[in-house]
Image (cartoon, rainbow, N blue to C red; front, top):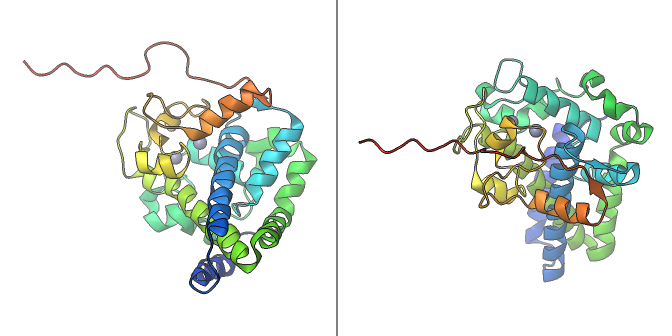
Amino acid sequence: MLQLSTALLVAMHLACLFVFVVPFSTKVLALCAFGYLLRMWAITAGYHRYFAHRSYKTSRAFQLVLAVLGTTAMQNGPLWWASWHRRHHRHADTAKDTHSPLHGMWHAHFGWVLDGKHDHPDYANVKDLTRFPELRFLDEHKWLPIIAYGAACFAVGGVSGLVWGFVVSTIACLHATALVNSLAHVWGSRRFDTRDQSRNNALIAILTLGEGWHNNHHHRMGVARQGVAWYEIDVTYYVLRVLAWLGIVWDIRLRKPGPTLPVPAPPPA
Ligand SMILES: [Zn+2]
Ligand SMILES: [Zn+2]
């Protein structure tokens, strides 16, 4: 199975420089922003909160929509993504963790994808997903949605649409997602005393539509809502609520009622 290769990643980064030579317009900027938000949401709500954690339910048809959209983000197929992510939670910040910053920030950010050791995960931990042939097909033919997305960007905005809507948008989405694996285990606050080094980071939460509340997430990984306090903006969850209202998703798993925030220590006498 062809995986995200170093050469392709380097080529995509270099291709970002085309923004200085292709015609610029608000249309292609909007295409870039739309592509970023749509695919970031597909990764956070689809790959992460649905496929990896099964924190809500949906139809088989919308499950496929989530999988196809997520695949356009060039983060490999849904089975690959969910399998490694489940392993991350199981061994978070230990020697067995797939991408802990304890093994180096670059390794946690991108290095683990490129080192050739993670191309073929053990799918034994995603048997609930591998039973769907369409998901196995997407994992093996992940280039199809990527090519289709790039072609759609070209159709909308020509070469500028391809550069802004596909290349820049994809690379931005890729790095923002990777920040959760790298910086969100190093930089930020810790509400919960989890066994790992996960942090809550508002900047990463904004960039990733709510995934920056990573310490909250490691504390209750199966819960669909990652922002615990009202001010912890979690756009992914808000969109899920709208989809639930529309009947597209259901059984959204939420934190059980009761006190969830640690009681602050009284001031010293
Ligand atoms: Zn983590
Ligand atoms: Zn997770």
